[in-house]
Structure formats: structure tokens, C-alpha cells
Image 1 (cartoon, rainbow, N blue to C red):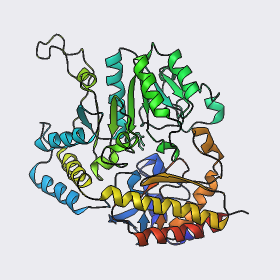
Image 2 (cartoon, helix red, strand yellow):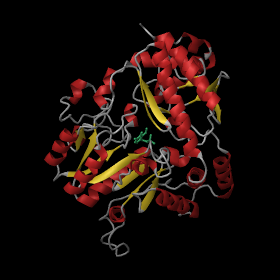
Image 3 (tube, rainbow, N blue to C red):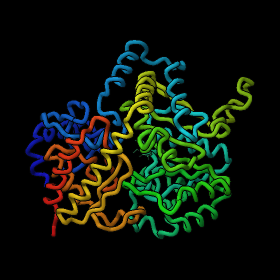
Image 4 (cartoon, helix red, strand yellow):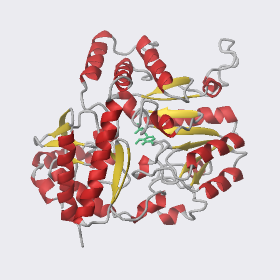
Length: 450
Ligand code: PMP
């Protein structure tokens, strides 16, 4: 299935050798590597990415989430250009970053105080530390299969095999990959998403040591797992009862599932929230926030008196609130909070993902398309998918082949992995979505084994 892709990407194929001689796998981040090789990008505009061979792809990958207004939205681009001419970076606080944080606070139900970071990974790392400081406890719980960033504390029981994870009722904490100290796993209790009974058993068992539950409202790090049977309402009540900080990792869903993010959409208010991606409209914006008394763990008690300087949870970073990022973030949130962006991307999301399911059904291939609003995934199985272990039913290889077939027809349905997801964006049109569905249908036909 890679033949057509190879044929139309000779320059990328060649460039891949050069790239691999300077960086492992020839890519800047592991998730950009795939078989046979990635295409290398020349430019992006609106709904399209152009590669170095001149192929123009209709983009539903959208940079893994940040591109909610289309590539190079004029208001975001001009805010960045203006700031680039005004101020590079000073490591002194700026008005723009404060205005951005005010906007975040205004839009997000759970956020009374907020701090900025540069990536989702930094945001979850700091949020976890603050929650530990607030509770005086050290463990965290996270759903098995969930990705919450690349730091050691979060990179546990994600992309793990059945053998490593063990029992579904009480999964093992296992590091992803090497280089993570074994001891870190002792601080993590994986919980089974959408399984209230076993989640409750695990949280009660560790309640005295448990600082936080960090969880995605909808588990897009496993494709698209939707909460069922009041799972989040249950978790909200239980964490409150047990004195555990509930952190919603809205890195993927924040400012994408609505102006109030997933928490507004689902009507559940966590104690803390992390965000990134869509908040920056394509620039390196991230942050974390929550209840004032929790966030004030960052403030050293008696600051200024000297001796207590080290007694609070540290948060810092040279690039936090970078003027370019803050300008991009502020421009993005202002556009998101004013116009018809969510109506548009949600309507096209329904059109795209429902259309993909219909196309697969017409072809007669076993496919389960799951989506909420502008975000969703195609699973190569007809199995019901609502827990991480259900995703193992999906045919990973067939998905990668389907993805490659569509990429050869210049449509990018996210990344070629079942654990990913893809999006609609503000610049997408009905015609583009209908074209994508036609391409997808041909690709389903090409990979259908029946
Ligand atoms: N949390 C979630 C839910 C994510 O999806 C991601 C990234 N895909 C992260 C955290 C980490 O964000 P980043 O890649 O910006 O470090």
C-alpha cells in the first residue's frame, strides 16, 4: 500500500536519508516516524500542507490538535508578526501574557489561577507537582492507555501490552520504554477508564497516598474513548470524598470542544486543568490552572522573608509566557470566543466522521468511527470501543494501510496509528470534507480483505 505514496514523494524519500544521518529516525519527535518514511514539509496554509515534492495534502492531522482556525489564520499570524517586531523575550512579565491568562480564566470554569508553560508535557508535570504539594501525598492515578505527556511520571501504562499491564481490574504500572527509573512506577496507580467499580477499589485502596487523578475527559490518546454511565461525575464525587485532586488533562480537548473546553461541554468541574495545543493556534502555548488555594502552592509562604523561600512547589521556565506565544494565544482565544468557529468545526466534524462510517458501511468493511464535535478516530474493527483494552481489537496494520492509501490521494487522516485521532478545522469546507470521504471510501475498498 506504500507504492503510490513512494512514487509521489521521491524528494522526501531522499531527504529522509539525510535527516536520519543527523537525527534518530530522521524526525524531531518519535510520533512523526512511520513506514516507509514521512514526507517532509515545505509549507502550510488554511486546510493544506505542501511537501517538498510539491504534493498538497488536505490536512486533518492539524499538527496533532493546535490548528483549530486553519494554518496561518490571519489574526494569529499578524499578532505574532507585530509582537516579533515589538519584543522578542525579556524574562520580565508582559501585559500580553497576563491578558492571555485572563482570557483563559474567563473561559474555563475550573480555573481561578493559571500559569503558562510551553508544552502539554510541562503543563502536566507541573500540575502533578502542585497537586502533590497541596495534598502532601505522592501517588497519582491515571487511566491505563492514557497519554499525559513525555515526562517520567506520566509515561506509565501507556501503549502497553496486555502482558505488561496484567489484570484489567487492577492494571500494573509500567514505564513506556527504557530510561525511566523503576521506582517511578511505584508512585502510579493505573485505573481502568469507564470501569467505575474497579476504579473505586483502586482509589480507595491508595487513598491515603493518592495526591491526584490525572485524566482526559474524553480519551483521545487512545483514539476516541467517550465516558459512559456518568464515569466523570462518579470520579468527581469520589475524588472529593477521598481528598484527591482531580486534574483534567485538557491538552487535547481544551478550547477545542467548546469555549469552555470539555468541562463546559460535559458539565463537570475538575480541581485543576491542563491545556496546550488549540489554546495557541499553532504556537507553543500551554498552561495549567485550577482552584486558587491549590495554585497558591506555587507561592512561597512568607515570600520575601528569606528563610521560607524553598517551601513551596516550584514552577518556572525561561520561555513561559513567551511574548510570541502569548500573542498567538490571545489572538486565538479571542477569535474562538467570538465567532462561529465551534458551530463550524462541530458541524463539519459530524459530517466527516458520520460520512466515514457510512462510507465504510457501504464498502462492507468492519469499521467503528467514534467522534465528539471536531475530533474523532476510525477504528478498524466492528467491536464496541469504550475502554483502552477494546482498542486492541482494532487492526493497526490495516489502519496504517488505509492511511497510506488516503495520503497517496493527498488526504491526511491524522497519523497512521490507531491510538491517534484527527480533526476538523475552521478553514475546512463542506466540499473538502465530502472529497475526503470519497478518498476514504476508495481507501477502505483498497484495504478491505473480505
Ligand atoms: N496530554 C495529552 C492528553 C496529550 O494528548 C498530549 C500530547 N498529545 C500531552 C499531554 C503532551 O503534550 P505535548 O506534546 O505538548 O508535550
